Length: 358
Image 1 (cartoon, rainbow, N blue to C red):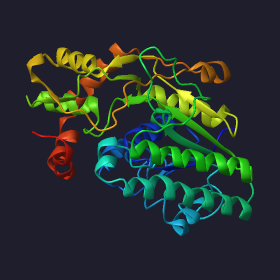
Image 2: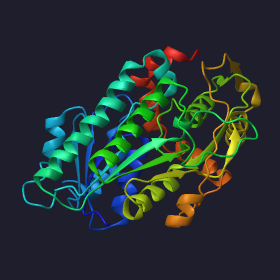
Image 3: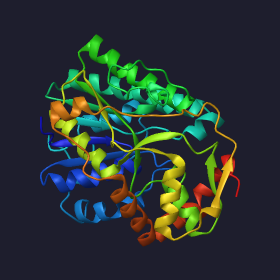
């Protein structure tokens, strides 16, 4: 299917904002309604160029709505075309669901917000979609964006996660995402709801909130601050550039089979300490900035994703090597200091103090 109007939840966040921009650039006819509560990680500055080009002062293909996925009435209104002035043009025929609390450290400090948003919020969204399709049946697709963390941890020689790997989350964050995944699956099986699930490896790239590893290390290194590395730094992650991820999401949205799960990985397994040292090299900063800190409770040792299914079924492969992607990302943060400096000086500062020592 090729959607005409997409309701994107959490479109002011890191992956969501990149998806909104890339999708509007990809298809000159598609319209996007962006529903975002603008919590600490949501930032409309990340979409300023999109608003200029495609909002009220541009070609009118983009609309932002400040709202909460847990508000069933508000979500129902948007699904019924309420973002537009009337008529069928703004009646969504697809939902791409990014909205979530997403940081493991924050979930350790307080899990309730993760369950409330990620589980209860997804349930509200699913019920609103079902009610709208009963009111106005139409071709429809629901894309639920999840994470490789729902699979748990791998040993050094274990095979990569496949879509058949049992779910075994180890943090409150991943448990809440697993709960939302299972709700989506249940609605597919029970109600024949037209949903598809993606699970992606660690993202990096432009507009990422600087509490995640790569932007955190870049922004601290640029200020010559210590770079906190958990444990021995040998935890392994599979890294994917966000623009490769959003390309994969488009392929799944338009060509994926309802009821299926698709793993999305960057084919770039790397230890955290290797990433940190490469960032320091690109920035011309010394390794002496590295500061090993007490490991995170329940810190998964290794993630790795098997891309076989999405490669064979949909023909998608990542286009950027980790080396190229990291260089591009460093260049972006160097060229966009006002964006991240405002975040560090405002809402982020208080949260930063919860789990990192200066």
